[in-house]
Length: 488
Image (cartoon, rainbow, N blue to C red):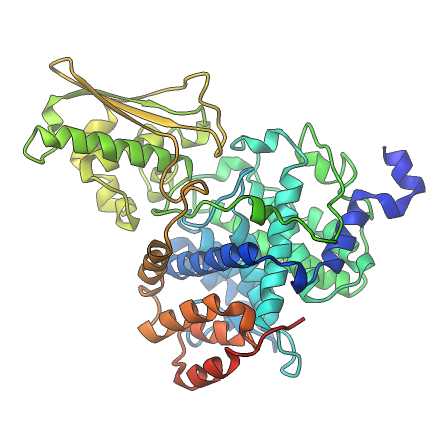
C-alpha cells in the first residue's frame, strides 16, 4: 500500500485529507451540523469559563504569565489579562477540560476542547482589516471536529474507551491543526505539512488520568495544533504521508487502517450522522450511566423510608459496569480521582439524589455517609457490557440487611447523543457555568452571539464577551450584523 502511495503521491490519505481541509467551504455545512456545532460551542465556552476558577487553571495561568507578545488573545473570564495566541489556546484549553465537564464523542474523545480555544485565539491574531466572521469560525471548528472523527474511524480499537493514551492528545491535536490551517487558508501543501508537524506533537499516556495533569492534554492539543499550522504557514515541512504510515499516526493504533475521505461534492459530515454527549455534571462520561441508575435506585429506597436513605439497612452495593481500569477507584481522595470513580459517583448519587458541580468539592468527597457506602460497594463486569460509550450500560443493585434487593439499570443517560439535552437545559448549564465568572450581560451576549454565529460579521465580539467586558456598545453592532448573511 505504501509503495503504491510512493509512486502516486496524489492518492495518499494524507494528500486526500489536505485536499478536503483546503477544499471544504461554508456551503458544505448543513443546517444540522451548524445547529449541533453551535450547541457544542456554547457548552464548551460555559465549561471553560467555569474551569477558569479551578486550581489547575490558576497554576497554568500563572505559569503562562512569563510569556509576552505584541499579538495577544483573550483569556476567558479575565478582563485585564491577555496572552500570545499559543498560550491563550493552552490556558483556555486547560480550563475547558479542568473539571472533565466538556463534550464527548464516539469513538471516544473530547472533540471541542482541543479545537475551539485554538480557533478563537487564532481569530484574534488576524489584522483588524481582515475580520474573521462567525461563519469562518464555524467552518474551521467543524473541519477540526471532522478530522478527529475520521481519524478515530481508522481503528476499531478506538471504538472502546482507551487504555493506553488519552485520545484528545492524538486526534485532538490533529483536529486543532486542521482547524487552524483552515482558518489561515493554507494551501494543500501547507495543510499536509500542518498535519505532519502536528503528529509530532501528539500523544500522552492515560496514566495521568484523575490527576491535575490530565487537563493539560486538551490545552496542549489546542496549543500544538495552532503551533503546527503557524509553523507550516512559514514553510516548515514534514512527512507528506503522515496519515498513511504505521510509523505516522498509525503508531498509536495496532489495527490502523487509513481511508480516504468522501468527495467534496455533497460532503457527508460525521457530526451530521452522530451528535456528541453533553455532560450534566463534571466527571468521566462512563460515570453518567452510573449516576442515573443510582438516582433511580435511591428513589425506590426512600419511598419506603420517609424520604430518608436507610443507610444502616444497606448491606452491599453492586455496580455492573464495563471493565475500565482508570475509572475503578474504590476510595478516591481528591476531586480528580472522584471524577474518575464509578464507586464514588454511585454512592454520591445514592446519598444526595443527584450529581452536580458541588458533588466533587472536598467536603462532599469526604462525606461520612458516602465513605460508609464506598466500603460496601463492589464492581462486577458482565461479559456483554463492552467498554464503549455507544453500547455500555450500568446496573446498580442495593441489597438490604433483610435480604431485599433494589435494582435499576441505565442504558442511555440524559445528555447522551441518543438522548440529547433539551435546549433549555443546555442553556441552564451554560448560564450556571458562565455566571460564576462573567457578568450577566456578557453571559447573555455569548448565548446570543453563538446562536447567531453564522450571521456574525466579526467574531471578535465573542472574545469581547468572553473577557467579561461591558458590551453595551457591541449590542447595537451585533443587532446590525444579524441581517448579514454569507461570509466565505
